[in-house]
Image (cartoon, rainbow, N blue to C red):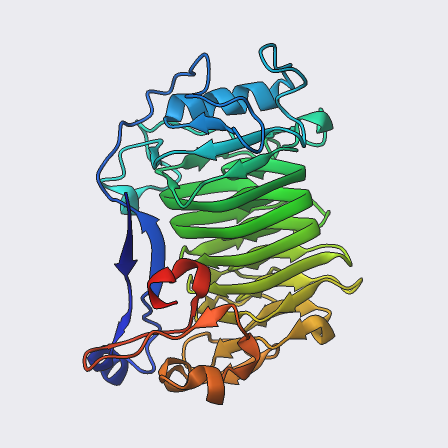
Length: 393
């Protein structure tokens, strides 16, 4: 059963902490917090149902079945029952309820040294560009549910597992209507809540609700750490949001953003998204409120905003994007009150972004994908994506 959890900013809080970097998210499209069965760490022998077609997708109800999907994708297995390969553009998968990979009771304390948790190996893992056929090519529909309690800890810069998230690598596939909630990911090179790297594909109607992500890089190649996707190649990220913290370190430059770390090619686009998570990095790293870098070859960020803080003495910081092709940042906004960075997008104060008429006065470029929940005597709200605020439309 789905429910809506209101997360907002109180008027009293705005008055008391107007210049303090304290934020709470607007509203999360999440499902019931009733704890489902926690993943045993094992692998099921089949899905819960379906035949893998668009009309009858393979159904995933448990952590064991999600691990079965990972197994058949990562081994490029043939579908002996319904024909073809499991990892194919003609195969469809759908969740039927929230899935808990770990008990999330104490998720706020998870870090690099936490023990006793199930470690998640991502779907579509190709290990340093070997076995590229294993990058996910199918269609995954979360149907409004979320994967909770993901934990990934990669400690070595020499690890072959260099793409980390629920999915490692997507090439020709799509992920939609899915959330990840309450977890921790620490990886090298490319990491994101939904996917570490998208070579080509589509991410739509997804969110990261407090799966905190830490990226580490010693590679001279373009890398990315983002709340939704680390590195975005050909394709689009749309109608997504992030509330998780993002941090990066390492001797080589890493691009870190609230939604995507790097929009890497001319046909990379990020539209109708927002970030409320805090971003941290030092030295030669690139930090952006929505995207770390928009490569000069022509990626595009449009109709997005950031109210998360951007801290650390990183070489490049921007309220919307840290570096790159700023002419391709269109109708985007950032909070001058909270972000701690400037330079890309249009600056607005917190008060301007919270007032009831902000979509017609101060954030006019956001367009039809957005809605503003009316403020009350005690609560104020940032603009929301309509796909997550169906009670308002």
